[in-house]
Amino acid sequence: MNILVTGGAGYIGTHAVVELLDSGHNVCVVDNFCNSSRISLARVQDITGKSVRLYEGDICEFDFMAEVFEKNDIDVVIHFAGLKAVGESVLKPLIYYKNNVEGTISLLRAMNSAGVKKIIFSSSSTVYGEAVMPVSEKSPRGNPTNPYASTKKIVEDILLQISQTDPAWSVGILRYFNPIGAHKSGLIGESPQGIPNNLLPYLCKVQLGQLPFLTVFGNDYPTKDGTGVRDYIHVLDLAKGHTASLDFISKTTGYYVWNLGTGVGYSVLDIIKSFEKISAVHIPFRFSARRPGDIASCWSTTEKAEIELNWKAINTLDDMISDTLNWLRLNPVGYN
Ligand code: NAD
Ligand code: WQD
Picture 1: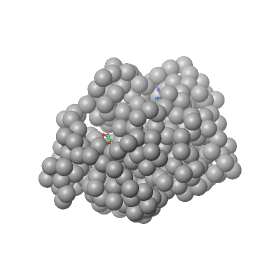
Picture 2 (picture 1 turned 45 degrees about the vertical axis):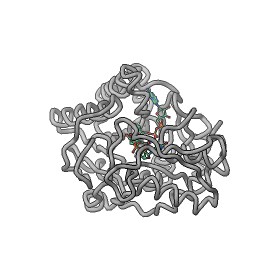
Picture 3 (picture 1 turned 180 degrees about the vertical axis):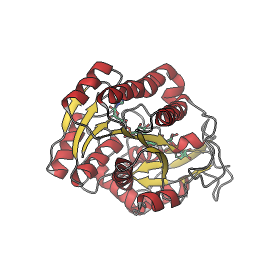
Picture 4 (picture 1 turned 60 degrees about the horizontal axis):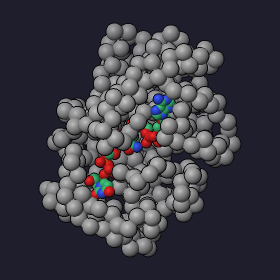
């Protein structure tokens, strides 16, 4: 199939593009590189030996998007493009609504004009908010605690309403849990700009000695050791979740939601322990107060994706950390 991948130069996008190319699909990427590098796509081509058609531009630009659809006979869109930093979204809500919501509307209008009605959207476990664990696709979505989460909820609603109005649409909502890890080749991985907010990228900087210690946000949560628990999933498993959902939605119409997680929660201390074991480097850390907006625990059920998509995450936490460390060893400054 001919697949348009928005945000295909980013962390998850590059891994998904590799998986798509390896599965025999033709891939066209739209990216404005606001949070990524051209090098990542060159590396994708090195890994797969296949080429990707790149359109550099902003999904918010309707005319640009319409042209991409005119020039390519697209069957399905996989929509990763978006801003994702929770803290930044609190400081710059309008930028987040413009990019993530207006950008998606522009994309959907261009799809409509071209008669392309199949889309997979990168949503997030963040839509569940403070919920009873584990969360399943039937769990109610919570009240968004930040503009980023709000944009994911709004886009999910827009896609639901479109598919209710026009039954020709086929929509797959993928709610990712906490993606970490990197490609086994060490050629592609996560390359955050500036000081990272997320746990694994922060740990990497501490391991490299670029930051002095990790701050563990809270040791008084009602969890096994008091620190926050999350469902970390290898980005390669996540990428396979996209090809599995692509197979599903390409054969049907309607609106479908799948959680992409492992079903297992690990605490911050578990992660530090595994990171130290695999890297053989001591990670200095200090406890501090809880980070505003954080929840104690979040992990997923896995049955729906297993049954409907025949997909299950297979990489262990040790795999995720050793692949992260391999990427880090080969690219200590990311793509820079
Ligand atoms: P990323 O920032 O690495 O990738 C996003 C890509 O989209 C980047 O290449 C960026 O340049 C591009 N982009 C952003 N706005 C654009 C625009 N207006 N026009 C064109 N390109 C644009 O992020 P990621 O971690 O790969 O996340 C991909 C998607 O998955 C995002 O929608 C994110 O919200 C969602 N998601 C991520 C996580 C996570 O923890 N990484 C978890 C849940 C959901
Ligand atoms: C994991 C755990 C922190 C950093 C975020 C977004 C979410 C989704 C995934 C996109 C928590 C603790 C972290 C640090 C720490 N993204 N921590 N010290 O918060 O689960 O989810 O990324 O959709 O929307 O909110 O991920 O990696 O930031 O935190 O102690 O320096 O590590 O408190 O318990 P989070 P994270």
